Image (cartoon, rainbow, N blue to C red; front, side):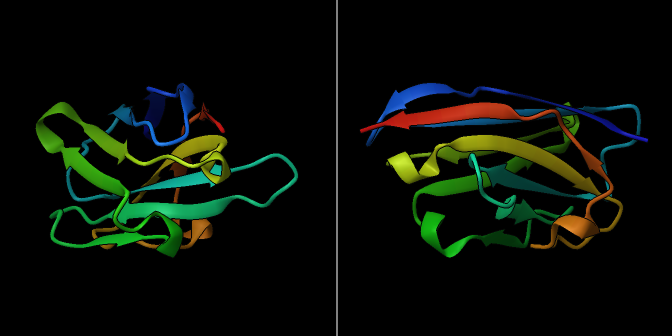
Length: 124
């Protein structure tokens, strides 16, 4: 089992930036895909971004393409989500997820472990 701890959330004005981090522990970080999901109040959890073990493949929700960048540092067992040009619609709790597979996925049920979430609030 792997434990995930997110950090970096907060309150930011529209157009601003935040960088989320997700630190993994309890298991070898290599050979696994990682993803970011988010859930706004009253809405279903949705896919945001994912990255394969090799970092050769990244995937994004259409509405965040060009604004968000997912990356990982295997030496630090950490995955990041750089969020630029933030919009009020990006307001949500952001969750980090770990998948016991080399290939990233957009589907939440493909992931085996989840972090506790970090709140991101974008004011207009």
